[in-house]
Image (cartoon, rainbow, N blue to C red):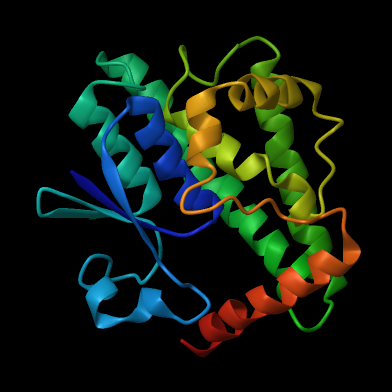
Length: 228
């Protein structure tokens, strides 16, 4: 059985959604990010980068969420085509998330929500880049039901991040095609089960007091990262 080491973050959800979609049996190890468990020797033996998620499959450890998604797709033959061109299309959109959507939204979160000082040029920079990337998705989805042929790990990866747009301070409503795609994935029972592992953590973007409390807790991790 696959062992999943994860936490309630977009990158963590990417793997739990995929496991649910693939109907693979797995056990969950919730990693306490606030206490720094991801930096413990035991966890670093699985992921030397000290980040979630990681999996162990029959003694074989895999880290980096995108690499885990590819591993699971190749293991099962699900959510990624077998032909070279189809596989390439899925990986292209997966890399789009790994190299663009994730890092830019992550930095928007840091400067808009978590950073102790408000640095408006940085906020503007990352908000602008997130909107640009959303535009890329939106234009592509105008002519495609899914990102790369059939529903795939590319859709899972991008959805798990873009669904949290408001927490990053970006309004997703102008991106109508992306919104249609969001709704289609949210209607999938496996996807909804996946974003409740290890627990549901809807970001309280519309509740000012709750958002402030969550941001203060998350600031611990930001400060930890600045000291590394």
